[in-house]
Amino acid sequence: MTRAAVLRIGHRPERDQRVTTHVGLTARALGAEGMYLAAADHGVVQSISDVVNRWGGNFFCQDNVKWRRCIHEWKEHGGTVVHLTMYGLDLPDIIGEIRKKERLLIIVGAEKVPGEIFGLADFNVAITGQPHSEISSLAIFLDHVFSGNELTREFSDAKIRIIPSKAGKKTEDL
Ligand code: SAM
Image: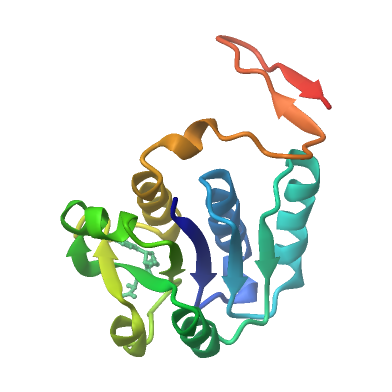
């Protein structure tokens, strides 16, 4: 089974806190193991760890990561690097090959991504050739990697869980 982590680059603390937090929450909810943040932003780390505390699982969030080192170390340890970009190969054409890999580092950008990333990535993958966002592209990519199995995953050590219901909001304290 493939395992995945996210590397978020280009984060600007004064502008991107909300989006980067949602990148992390999306990564966690859809089956990734953690997020490396290539910037110093304790607020993002704190928000995500509050969610992990309450809603469970072992998702990690590490800030102050040097992105070049992170990518090189990932590759040195046999992992595969995927860069999500609208300029990449179409997801349907490449997902079969990507699903065979054991460990994925998924890079998402904010504004302009350094050109070097395209060469460092093992796969540059487009979630359509249209511009949208790091959150939507990550969500669709993870769902394809895990073939939808992540949608019904349980989170260990949760303090709360939702009881799915047709109408209204039902939760259970654990
Ligand atoms: N214009 C920027 C560039 O050329 O690098 C992209 C900025 S976009 C708001 C932020 C991030 O969303 C991108 O770095 C990429 O990771 C992701 N993204 C946006 N559209 C995408 C698409 N169609 N396919 C894959 N990733 C996408």
